[in-house]
Amino acid sequence: MYSKFIKMLLPLPSFFEVSFPSDEEPNVFPVTVGAYSVPCPICQGKTIRHAQTLRRFRHGYALHLGFIWIEMAIPRHHCIACDLTFTYDFGLGIVQASSAMFRRELVRRCHGRSIADVAREYEPSRFIDRCLARKPEQLTDEERGFVAQWHQEDLPTKYIYQALNHMRYVLNATTITQAKRRLTEWFKRYQFHLCSAISKIAKTLITREKALLDTIISPLSNGMMEGTNNKIKLIKRRGFGYRNEDRLFLRLRLETGR
Image (cartoon, rainbow, N blue to C red; front, side, top):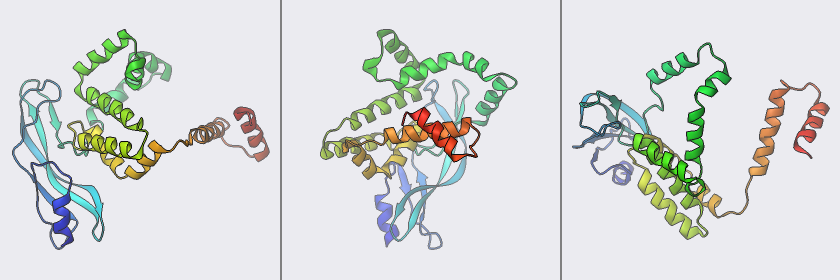
């Protein structure tokens, strides 16, 4: 009975067909996918499915059942135009953050080089990170032009930037009703987003909705305490540990000014 009720309430895309679980595994819901089309993330061209792998991943939690698992075939698509092959997870956030090819290329670029040398090579990337992390109203006209260009070149970057600024709008709420409405709209928009990174974040935040609402409304902050803790950890790492606690506490007072 619980399984039938949960099947009707599972927050999944409308073209998913959720089947009832078996008696042996009452918390595993098999899912089949109806007709769908996937554009290429690079050129937005037509793709074809050439392989698929049966995967099982945790999707939620329910009373009397525990963790709810979704079992479905995750397809691999191939772009006809640009010859790109990629895994499509329907925005459920179960694809690895980086491919094996990317990790091998990163190791090859960094092998045998100093950190300063690699940092100089990736200085443009640091500039990009700074521009994308700042609020739009804090950017200059030139930086806004760069951001618009980067959004055209990379759609996932555009989606993440939009989700970040939408979350800033949520955090600016002044009442609990306003915060709850804005947060619900954010979840509805990004929980099953095409960008897997955003859907991962949304699915993580949903489980902490009450804590998020309390954080938005509460005027209190533990920022100073967290900053002090980070300083203490840094001092311990720089000294490779202290055998004398009095010397450690003296150093902490000198560094933190207390």
